Length: 110
Image (cartoon, helix red, strand yellow):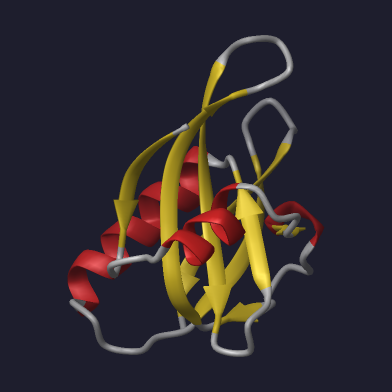
C-alpha cells in the first residue's frame, strides 16, 4: 500500500480506517447522494489479481466511510479539493453511462 494523497495529516488509526476498514462503495450510493468530505485519502494497493489499483477513501462529516476505485470520481474530487483549498463542500454522487453503455460514477460539487 502506497499513500498518494491526503487532504490532511493522518495519524495511524486514520490511515488504518482509510486503507483497511470496510467502507460503503460509492457505486452503491444513489445518484444524487451528497457526501461532505472531512478526510480524503488516495492510495495505491494490489487487487486479488495482483494488479495495482488506485483507491479513493472518504470519511464524511458524520464519520461514514466511502470508497471507490473510479478514476472519474477521483479526478473530479481532486480538482474540487484543489479549488476549495480546505473549505468545506459537498459532493454529489453522479452515475453516468459510457458510450459503451456501462454505468460509471463521478461527482460534482454541491
